[in-house]
Image: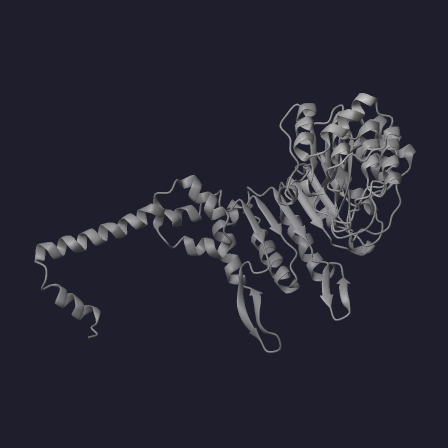
Length: 481
């Protein structure tokens, strides 16, 4: 027999007295309240951390659960970092030729900026394949900041913009620059931002005549506040960015080598810059290294000036060696890079007194030979012997446990040694003619037979517990420059 809820209540009331019935309903209500209190009684700081992990859409949905969650939704810590991704602040709209598409909703964007925009400390714009959505967001954000009465984002200190310069079509991969209306609205946006401390403009790939005015837009209201600046591939061709001299308090500059020339390096050395990170990737155009005389003059002008070299992305290019530059760090963030004797010899020749970090991040995508002759064991040992200031060494290539022991022994100032467990070959394959004493050679033969003995001896040499990392752990290791 089927019955609706009203009929069920009438039938159930015959089995209980009025007092019992009211007590039963009250107990059910208390249980429901208890379930609600579980979420509303969470510590506020924990609730804010949870909200900060959600995308804006899910934050808004969670804010409707209870009053406590509604208050957490407007907490300043929740909106400290705003990340614009492919579907952020979009709505679904039907296109006659493409079907349903995600389109930026100006109304959602305006409401978001007016209600929580004043809490933004960092704005990150990820590469968006839909240029219309990108343009619309930049347009709405520019209009929001274009207020002469008051600056609407007083907490904002970081702006990170990366353009999606690569797309795939019928003919393959297409690489294109920004330019046009997107560049125009980007300049307007930068000129409306005040007191920024950190700015990143990556993969714009502009023509030489389009670059003019880009740094002037930043310097309009941030010439004295800017501390770090990142400019990766702003132009398609070699073009020095001499306008960087407008930022008088700049401390760290990350830039691709096509934006450097001898005059600019001297300019950077004279303006009090502390660190210069020279980065290469797949979109970096061909350029040549600067002369030794320039770097020698820079070291005389600014003894504290430090340079790091790195390469990232899916590329098989080699790092451009800057002869006798004050390089303290060399980092490979590409899966195809392998050390070779010529590169190591140049590193030892030019940077043996200054090099502190040599790292191969991530996992390799090339074959690693098990043959001692084809591996880089002797190259890494040569590097550690010739560079006594080396403190951090990350090796992802195949090496033997004997090589690991030699590196730990020869590294006079070595503090951090990271290798992959899957890349360790448990054997002693060094020839006796390698220049080792008889005692040390016996030590290598004894402790290189298994990983446990090798790890124990490395721990003794480094003076702290040590073990090789699994691939899942090694992938998470990142050098902070």
